[in-house]
Image (cartoon, rainbow, N blue to C red; front, side, top):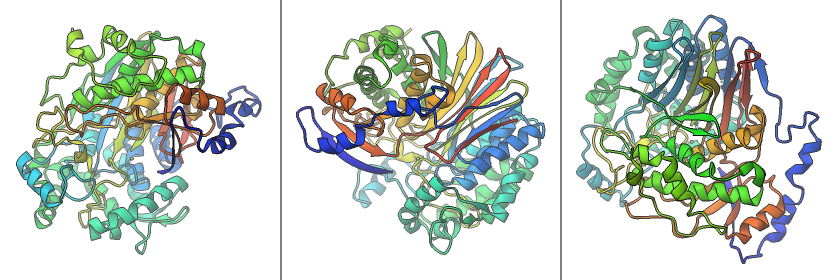
Length: 583
């Protein structure tokens, strides 16, 4: 991510000329550029009757679409597209990472949730991890190397979904990616950019990373054909022998040997004992629409909490991109993210106050803390009183089934650790544990870390409406809220809602930090460049510190079902290389 940071306090007029040049020609100009009147859409929605796939890489979209055309289900298409993205967009995902999904089963008229995240090594105690960190001269878990690696949950997630909802054999589903892995594919523009950023950081972690993910020591350039035959061989084994070859068979034993020989901590028993978990999606009703997210250890309910707070205000009246609506949304984010830092963790190790966190009364109490000025000090609330770098893809099939799926290595290309011959990099999700022993998210053996990746789903009157997601770390719940409000409050279409200007707030307390910390300086708001200069001035007058950030606003994909015409609408935003396609 490239950023230009300009911290402007309410009384500061430095660099205002820069902002004047940047924002004088506001987003209103685009209103006259599009005949349809969809001011913010970069292109029209894709509309189709029989099926739809939206991913962040066009070739992966086509892989998923071909599976649908071959009689595959939405789940089959999602697995196929995810496998292709693991090959074609290793900067965001792969079989060394974790997976979460929300699935609509049209036959049973039921929404399912899957948590396919992995756990920390059983043989690495808190005390030993603390000693390892001391030898590195730090008290926080690093981003790279062996210490942040947890069990990859993606493969088990695929097979759990397939067992419940699959139609085609796994060999047919994985065949297109296996072929691309051996024959090669041209690398797309944005992925090439992030690949080039990752290689200098990750090559020193393991010599196998360089031999697997570079061409003569360099990241592939835009349009350059890249091959990963080792990943192709791994996927072939998985396709033929099933999930057990990865968790109990030759691949698990190969990983075990490598970890023992290279001071790693994952062992065969970590893989053999791994399991995904079917969970009940949590929801809140926002102005008549039921918005669904998955429960912790992920951060999805942060979006629900923000929506509950914002429901107390008339955003439509305030207006899209007005300083008032932006102020309310930013302040709601600050309040919710302090709860996120304190309460979100693996529910197997904690009793989490979920009912209180999602209570409308709790939201009303928190909303009263929002004033006319930007808050500087923000702490978590007391919900107990109210008890009672990632890819996203979505698919839909001819039978009305829909899949909302997100999958990640965490920081771009993960830990940098690659087992020779397997063709994938391990995630570094374990970096998101806290080392504060009093914290709900404290590291423990066999525990799932706090997770940032979250799929979303919206229903209207008990029927499926929108399957969507927005990748990008802490941007995800903020982005989910912006998409929902764009559609429900500001009347935007599916494509327009994703392409519209975004904001992101930084500086909230993180779930990795020591307990008792809270935001004290108000943080910083990053804004995309198409926001009117007058709005910037008004935000500054309210006390917000503003900066311009190029990139980092997530990557949105979505499918909407129109029950009247019985068609799907697909959207894929312009910030990624992606494509929505249907038939």
